[in-house]
Image 1 (spheres, rainbow, N blue to C red):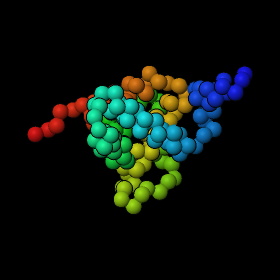
Image 2 (image 1 turned 60 degrees about the vertical axis):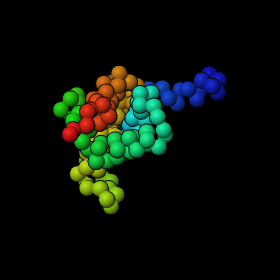
Image 3 (image 1 turned 90 degrees about the vertical axis):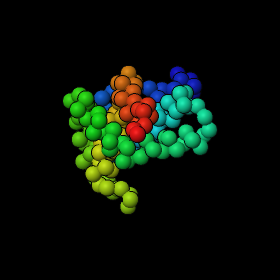
Image 4 (image 1 turned 120 degrees about the vertical axis):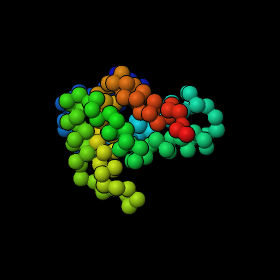
Length: 145
């Protein structure tokens, strides 16, 4: 394997047994970035426009309050393994920012852990499925009058 192959292997999927050795906060750490990437990629591909406008749209979806809403939306649809990861992330010991409720922060962390798990295990179709629901809910709904 040459150096180029090594770099690509860093992004290859890992086995679920390796996931079991990671903390839920490590999964959430990756999940937070993946969440942001999915939302921003959607906006660039579909909403086109000024970066400042896309940033405002992204910021309205990529925050703990919105992620907590997304967690409540998706939690009934999670399979057993995803639910286990969600629970571990939700119950992980971490301190929310001063302006955030503990409940919203823990729900967001649970969702980020699930997203990190799916990403690291290479379950991109499942990620696409969950993000299609998040995007439909936050970015494609018609504004209410």
